[in-house]
Length: 93
Image (cartoon, rainbow, N blue to C red; front, top):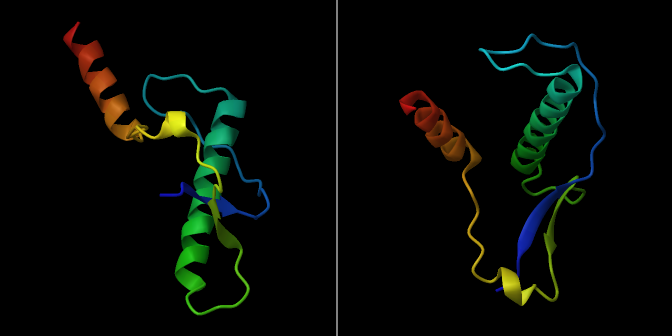
């Protein structure tokens, strides 16, 4: 079956900086990148919800015509779960 990805054709928006969380130290560039990704994904979700029955869409699905055979067994990684496991492992040691 073809591989599909959601592509957002929006623009980057700026916003105020937020303080770092917990004991981790984030640079302003790291915070800006994280905020950009979060805001862009919120726009994608909003556009997906609002484009039901709409002719003009900002979000389109990308389907590879020739999927890479070496990626056939690829399984997505839940980054949130991975971070939780790493945090738990660090507390144990």
